[in-house]
Picture 1: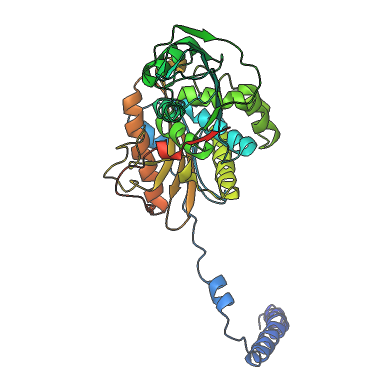
Picture 2 (picture 1 turned 30 degrees about the horizontal axis):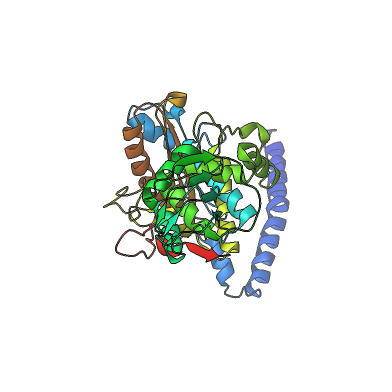
Length: 419
């Protein structure tokens, strides 16, 4: 008999005992768990089913760098931000905190501050003083004094004055025509030249034209301008630097506009540099700052019972710089915007900012700043890129507009009163 066999038998028996002791508790616990689970009923739940479903991956922001690179264009020359009005959805972002020259997008800031400080119904007043009386032949040899700073004063205003003077028996004027230093006519900022143009439209032949500070007094006539909202629409649609500078002067100039942006909108001071209220010359704003301005402007127009379309043009249905822009594209009629163009400063700039109306996100704010001498090419690329960004994540929703372009600064909107 092999002396080792008893030892092997003892070891085998011991191993069997260990295995039984190891797995028996696990088997008992598992069987117990199954038994308990059989008595637990989990009710049907939409919330649980939703949690069980795969969580959808949010659509990533549009790859702007790749888009420009594929067209052999340097992405560093461009900066943009496309974001829902509530700021919860960002459709595209590139160099959004880089301060570039916004060109005439500065007018959006001037629009915001003017509306906030003056109100939509504000009207410039041009006061007319008549010194002397017409003789039997209808000739006035005294003085006609015109005082006012209405930047839109022109032919329509002059025609109203002519009619009112004719009602007073004035058919001919050979006296002295006096205008205030801030008087403008047909977008001319030179008061003496403006006075001569006024006389020509009135068909008067004054013996003398004078520019002087006009003393306060009771005017014979008061001509009230178009309401501010109409003036702003004209200014933005046609990108009128002349009107923008005059409105800017009413609210403290570029310094006043900047103070509002920094103080009220809390824009970082180092990202706001304004040398003009029109966007001429060298200014600095970021796409993020400009989107904040557009949001604030949208809120301000609503607060005053207006819509953005009341102070900004629609592409491509309105007269002005957006006329025929985006025509035939999905964005036609869905964009309320403002253009910006500089040919020389900062190597040339072509900018666009505003709101796209969409089906899912509603109002989508956008700002696109493009640097480079090829302004026409940058405009084309801007329109194409904006369309691709929107269409990648939403559907444009054109707003109702008349079949013909809206008339701006119509004579019927002027007011004239006798004093």
